[in-house]
Image 1 (cartoon, chains in turn cyan, yellow, purple, brown):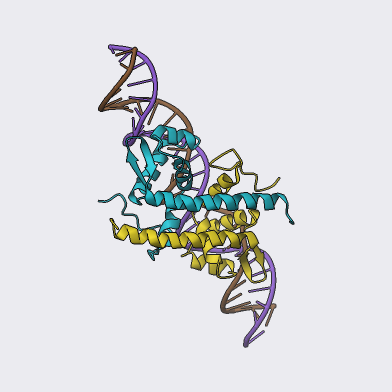
Image 2 (image 1 turned 90 degrees about the vertical axis):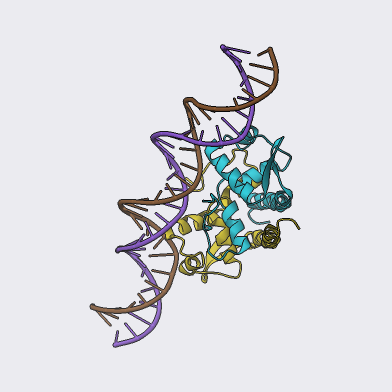
Length: 110
Length: 110
DNA sequence: GTTGACGCTATCAAATGCGTAGCATATATC
DNA sequence: GATATATGCTACGCATTTGATAGCGTCAAC
């Protein structure tokens, strides 16, 4: 049986956004995508970059990300696919948002 | 002591993006933000919208989201704050991306 | 042949999430 | 006052997920 035969946690609609939210709403998934943005990483270097994430979880996440077509494994290790990179763009936008958000939180009333 | 004194899971850097990734990289968090976008919801209606999420988790997430300043509770129930709405904008962008992504996955080679 | 790095699995404990029941409050209806 | 309904939310016990640690099998260097 396919190991990707999970019925999608949060929803049964199959709507892409729900599938995506399910995927990235798992611990470490977004972080892994984030850390892969600069370039390929080996399993162990990626593990280090993610602050010592356990190999069990890292491997599970990498499997899911590969099945989702966001990551693949080449000679240089794991890297983002084309889709992974465009999703990474969205994360960069989030990064900008997060900075403003943090500023706003430090200065409760603008 | 503040109940928000969690040391931030994924990272200890305190970088806003990491704080954000930690927050939204929890099951249901993104989904809740997503469901609140159209307008305020009561605890129970929100629970229903999220496909029967357990009240335990819903309450935990709502607390975190309120502490993060993304959600607040008014007369009409829970609703997005200004920050929550702008983050919601990012999610809308993600929605668009997810649709394209799903299309691409159905058509392996464009 | 030993040392080191690699990807990854095994094992078990701890944290998190879930389903169900139900409390306390409020409002409305009798 | 008793009953009914809806609210937000907590308690409990079990299931799933995550986590830390150890270590295997492979490979290249030495």
